[in-house]
Image (tube, rainbow, N blue to C red; front, side, top):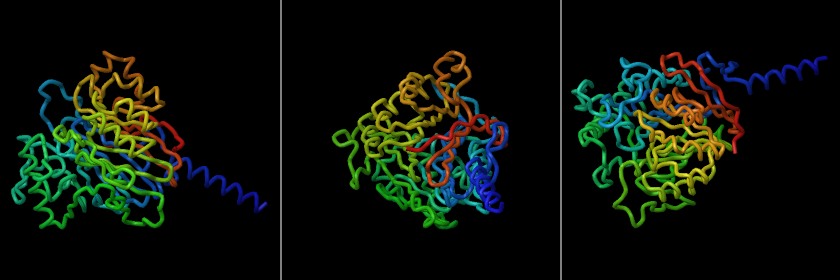
Length: 401
């Protein structure tokens, strides 16, 4: 009898462990349960005004990628709806979201990576944004997020060599503010700054219990138009260096956890040969943040056929048919890849219902949650209209490759 009870209890424990987190199962209509040790979370945060990703590693170490922010309307295109509302600045929304999902006991982010120097990734100078007089910089994007929620280390593609690496920010002004922000907080607040190191597997190392998760690592795969491929640096723009632009210089890395693989590489994709070379260096993956908001010149069919992700997450900030590019949906879904978009204009949804019906989501925060050991994962879509972060859709579990 005692043996039967033990077997039943063990079976129940396995069911509870595989069904949820902290003993709680994610359900549509309820707030997404908190991260638990052993899981790996990728949160694509939706504000309609810039990119921001939150990664929570299996031991609770955190990495935020980008904190874009702008308020002005596009010259040619209208903005999508701002989320959660027009009265909440994007960086405040990022901070609220990150703080909500930070592992218990944490009050700061461990790492921040700025993929490249464009406003939808680093912030823009807007007249209404507050100026921090002591440091002589405007609180926008990365700088504003730091004042809401500090991070211990910041990393970008050109630290210490901004001039020699020919940074081509959308605004020279915001780049000067960013450099003053770096210098001030290094000297006054103990912020650590580093340059993204191509080929490194320990630049975003776990801090709490790395030895417990030897099958987790983050590989720095591309930056400044160069690629780490099979143990050496390859010039992805050899012979056409004069064509490289800021988007193409983006930092990119692959997260590998057991059988699960995820790629994020900012806005690369301006040059298909480069994007294809990056894909070949990475190999097959499970999930990807779409390069450059799934624009026409990004995520070409050849690179998608190499990567073959099951899950693709695309961000967008304007009401544009080409961002995300709806003409790509068919060949992407034909590869058995699910598309999740954080923001699509209502007018486009009405005008092209058949095309957008191919997407699993056209609004909301998108969360990929990988189970311990990296054998399977789920995709959750969360309501982005308030700070309750309720689940609106659940997909999976998907078996990792």
